Image 1: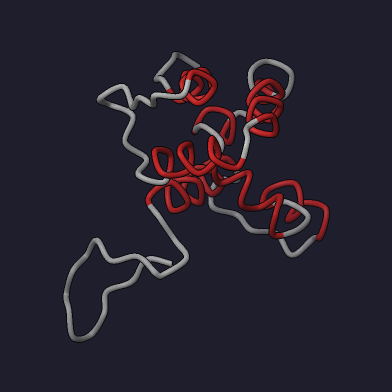
Image 2: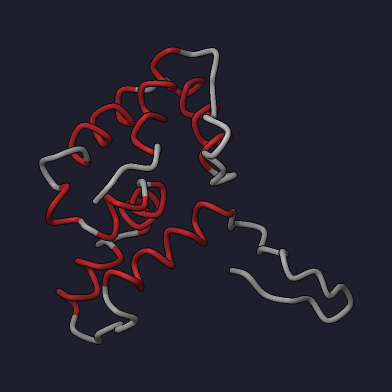
Length: 127
């Protein structure tokens, strides 16, 4: 995860398997749970997923889909999951390269139409 290496005081350093989107996803989960991480299995699995695959997919979701999961369960999040699953390996690679930066201010854009459709979910919208 994010930490400050002893030899290099770079505050933007992230661990090898982490990226800006994953770190933001963790912030959103903790925001939704009000910082509480319950030891109860059902609560933990609802917040963080039931396995590593589910956890990583959750971290990739747009902020509003993570924070307001119940509200967006059938209103956006379902189509996001379906569109993500429909991507080919090449399309997923392109999508991940854009999403992992977690920078959607400059209207992240891909040459691949299906990736652009999926990226629309990340545009800022009112709750």
